[in-house]
Length: 556
Image (cartoon, rainbow, N blue to C red; front, top):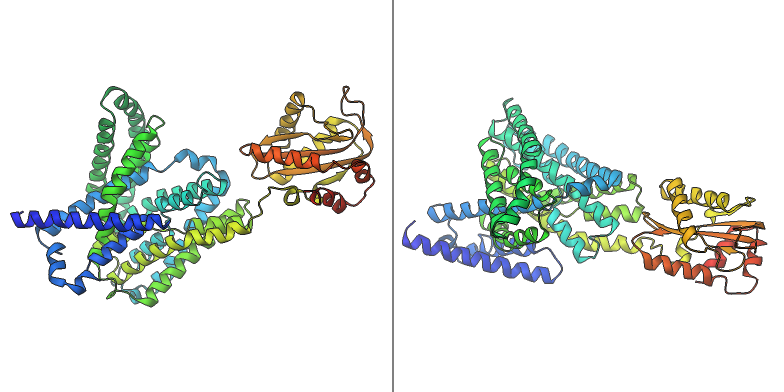
């Protein structure tokens, strides 16, 4: 590079970083993902705006060819690899296993349905969307993949802003998005292999290479990394040594996968997954890498998107509309249906569906690579970027709408169900509690024996008979919501040797283990419902379950 080229390069990097960070901060203040501001900054500095106003200066600062362009592209490529390392570090493999069937159904249908929705129309009408002759299969596979991947960083930020990150819904969304990322990148690497092999049968070699790389990485590399991470953090300068190790490992893996014809980003992402899965990696280390990459390298990549394409000249309203409809319909329908099959209510399922709908970094990276590889044209690329921006913007407002429709289960009125009121002739404490726990367990979807054991264990520590004639056994378990079941025995039964007064009403309360304050409030509410004299007597004489439920709800 000449003296003038070095000056232009440094000025260009400074301008890119300043505008990307400035607009990124503006959108962060507006509770929107920073990448939206960073992409808009690129559109402003690129041929769309700046290039139309002052084309000579824009072409000088951000040339499309020559040494300056070559170095800028190198920086952008490094930024992509760094961003994928960080994305891999955010993958929590243990979280996936903990979420069970709900996360499995949500992630599976949240990938399959949008993939099919993207593949079918773009396969049969590929030429209408600008695909080259003979590339219709690869083009359709790419579009299906691009429409099926969620953006984990954007989703995490949205959940954090809505105080949902550690909620049950938030954890399901994150776990499902992690699975999306893992399988999305594996599948995209297969597509890259098909491209590099010219679409011939040789792509099977690339597929074999992917699984060989994964096998070596997880069965050999992971145990080695698990041993090296604590030693490096303990014996060498911190955090410099561990940061260097992670970046060296990521760049090396990226070089290996690139040389194998898979793509550098796949190796970088998988190294991030393996290192991030190590229990020895300090949380502080993750945060340092996250801050370094997301505040320096990520803005340079996202702003570069707008520098490459004229978004006005290549904006096709029909194509953008088709991509948007297919992306939103496929992802919300697939993820929402999966969550519903996993046992969530309709409002919960729709909240999860729109939570999974956020796109961002992944689609844009995929789109840029596909554009460079000649799979898609500039109009399709613009449509994908617009889709990523719109879906990221609408996720939080749509989630808020369905969150407001969710039943809260915070008061007796919201919890007590006449179907869980029993008239019994059982005259022994154990038998009554077994009947109640069995009834609740069948509704809550947990083991009745476990619930019974937990209630009886608490019985030994706390006296459940607070008001003569009323027993209030209760426990806190891993349930999604509080449950109340009521047993009415008109003849009464002896609760224990220490309590001589017969018990006519037994009210079982089961509440979430992580909500102790709610548990205490509900206990107080149940006791408060019997503040009136002869309240128990009047309930025992009642034969209508709805009237018994109303006694509690009218007094809260």
